[in-house]
Length: 297
Image 1 (cartoon, rainbow, N blue to C red):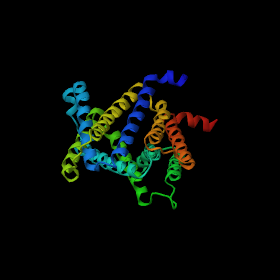
Image 2 (image 1 turned 90 degrees about the vertical axis):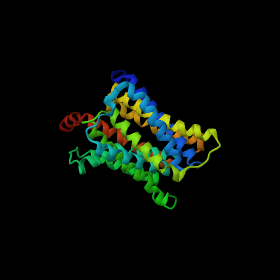
Image 3 (image 1 turned 60 degrees about the vertical axis):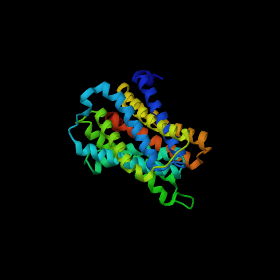
Image 4 (image 1 turned 135 degrees about the vertical axis):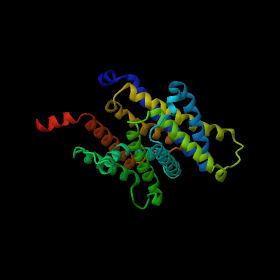
């Protein structure tokens, strides 16, 4: 409780809200993908998200929202985001939401690996222990045995990889363009891309429920990104990190309420290993000096 007061209760609440909104988005996507084509679902979702984001961001930032200094990298980020989303929804069609969410939560640790291999950054040797922990937790969930997803297991891993590059690009672009501009261009790129492909996946829907759920996906996407930004403005990353993994809990709850799925003991253990490794990695990144002092004492 002392930590929460020191870092800002608002930041924690925003982070938990982001996890809830993204879990609702994923749960809705898994429900819809059984009845609606992937292209149509993503077209409506991204168009709704782009419109809501514009209505919120444009009054706040004005013309500055449209200014970017690295359009090619912004275009690449949008393409990676689109690819990540396609693989995510495809993976949700094959596997439970909680397990999928836990795998995606390995992203911060994979970004650490990419920062070393791609950007040639240095990290503490113990960081590799936490990266390995994230990998072990992922294998506990996927379990490459006779009951595994087969080739379908590549979908969440592909989503994880593309999402990690998105985060890496986000960090680089953040030194040149505003976070609002980056989000604005990425979501509109995805919306236009999905709209171009829409004729290939259009289907006639008589159900207002399905239309409403597709619109809900877009609203939850916009709301999730907005409150996530607010969280980082109210509290430091290291304080928010434990609450970020609440996303897994919300995802498991959604899977249970909507699809009556309860993770088995290995999946639960894998989720806990991923969460623990992620929190420890974030803590070490935020306070490297403290770790060095402890090692010398």
